[in-house]
Image (cartoon, helix red, strand yellow):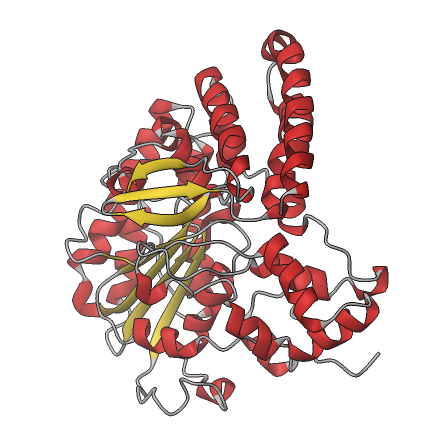
Length: 432
């Protein structure tokens, strides 16, 4: 095997990728465009598409580590030599069964950030994160602050089935963002990522200038890999894998497209991307002979969002319906699809109140195939997700997440569905 540049397998830290000369797909022209903004920005995408790496890239940029960007698109564009205090909060590991536990974890994250920045901040008697954050801002008189929040929606998703605790956490987050807004003169940049979009929860009500770039065509490729990026950055891997599989490079690209491409998140349906995790996993799987496994669905398919959502029997039934219907989307002879107006993508106040189609889109099971005015036509993005829905969805997920009562009541239906899915899936494959 030729000497290939090492892949960033499981690495989501920008500095580590650059310092170790790991393969990096340069999207820093878009990073520059966003970092030049002064309004708070929010981006929603499914799990394992590269959101954390994007946050880490902003962290390195505003930390003044410009040397790491040498040779990248942003290097000559970025002329900001100011020093910033960068706070990075990752809420993906703040799972909490109560409001009190969440507040304590929130404060612990703030405290660690303050300590890493070398700033001593006294914890307020109120024990409220927004007061703790304000005390920090008061200590940063000589410089502005950059606030980066990864998986901002995770604390709410964790409590989506407990209305009382959900509301208390929602209010706490809302007050925190009000503090951010009221001190915007001390804050240079705010960037948040998540899976769901909480426009109606009021947690962002203070941000009257919030930029939601989740469906913007300008940032449709901010995470994930475009076909051009695949051909350019993975050129040597394509050649090596094609040789190992005894395929032409074009044939290999077609297979990769069929299995892992097809995700579209923007409202013109003109930009589609490959799943980041699946592509890196495929090329990193050379020891097993490059196999087209369901890498993403095996690692990120059963998210907390989906598991908690399906505890409701109505959601369970709707999810089954919308997972079966668009399987035909992969069959060019059929025109089955799921339609929804774009406004519905941001309408839910709690993820448990979401339309099943919205949740499936945000979780990565459905994607935008085309648009008709304000209507988005959804379908299954690729063969990997189709296999997941048809073979693993019923037999694996429900057997481990539903109550005994539901499992008993649905056992016959599930068996029939699984067989129907498998049969339909085989028919679809014959027509691809």
